[in-house]
Length: 531
Image (cartoon, rainbow, N blue to C red; front, top):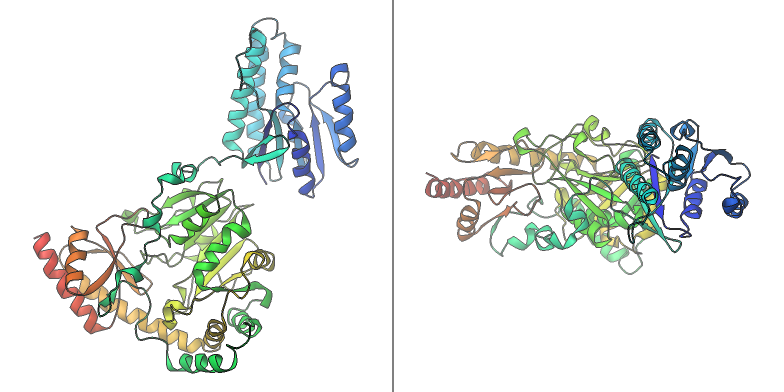
């Protein structure tokens, strides 16, 4: 959907590539030819182009009126822009003198072409010569042509969904408009910060408020299911059919829409290989492994930052329209923000895949804004059982998506990704929705207790959270973290999350006694560093 701009030099293969794109749409195609069939110099090239095009394609020849050729259903292929500009200039005498009327006509028609593209709901493909890479032309007419072509391709590139440069028949995807500098300069990204996780901050014997997993380990019924799996299933390769069927029944989906994974992290790592996006927009704060995965696969990334002064409310309009993949957490980590389903659905666009990371959704009683039960063709929901079942060592997660998207994820998933014990945990969980409801109620109670204690401490700012943790901001984050660490209390510094600062801390809620101990040390520390 939208505009694809195909650039290339003479005999680069750009036209053949554009024709393959048009054919791949499966739509009726209008081919807009620019060359004059009466010109003997073009006769041979025109014949070769006609011979390779399907006979079902409609062919029209553009005169000075270019934008009107887009008034057609199906796919419109305009080939090529530089030839059309030269024709307008020749007919207007611009190669022989200034001819301002001819030059103005080119600018007007390109502006109209940009407007016409924006009004279309079906794809348009414009082929243009990649000129001006060598010496400046010696004659004034050629220089005018180069200027017009360069200005026109830049205008089209600003509104294009894709810009492709064809060299020797090989297509090179150019970075999308709207990508932030980090997306084209990955050396500027601190991968060490993106790969910091709370489990590395907890020493043996610490009071753990850094890891966002429910305390106490797996419940008794899950331990029994794991023992049976160890005895009965560990000696064979993992078979996921029973777990898939149970998860599908839990969420009201079909079996072929469930993709078990080695934790939710693996599901997120599958995205770039499975979907091959041009520009991934990641809504921050969020789980940073998603960006690491994108960059590891050479995908351009743009960071969309929620505003802490607006309580991290999701703004769908902040996502660049050129992003063909959007990843957002709900509830978001580490802010704990819970977005309504309507706000998430507002992120959908033609040609875009929306991924909602619902790793903490099972801790929200009733899961009201979850999209997991909606069979939308362009939405992937990622779930994790790590938190509520307290099994981070098993890596039990899964993705839920319409069958075509699920097939793409399975196609790049390593074999036996989900081990026999993790599959047993997923199946046991899916068969006990009441147990999950009890875990969610406990998480809410523990977080409410922590929030009440934090509200009584001067110098602590908190944000509303729907998960089992609270994001706080203090005056001197590093000093507070150091003091807590000295008292054997581990919290998660949040400065490694894009958009947050060294004074932001994620604190996981525990039982009343642990929450009370943390609050007491935090209060005394803040009284010392920020009286």
